[in-house]
Length: 100
Image: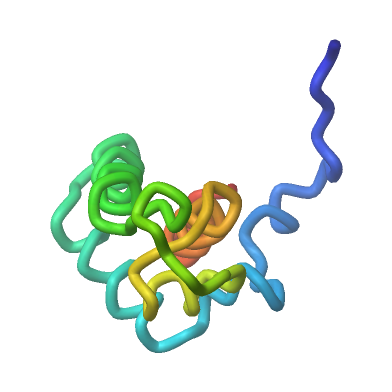
């Protein structure tokens, strides 16, 4: 199996979508905090990943009763299943200029 990018335009991996809503106030605030705390993109990516992994509960594992999808909803609820957590991760990185 060969993985292929869906777009050859890097900007497509930086833009806002309905689900990866990088302009939500909570997303912006948190993304700016991660940027201020990390001097390199590598450190930024690591700390963002660790936050989503450790601070956002996996709904199925936590016995959650809501289903989140949009990045901002995941952050607000503090939980999501794996794809929803990835939406939050992508939104935080995209806001900081990391193509995701």
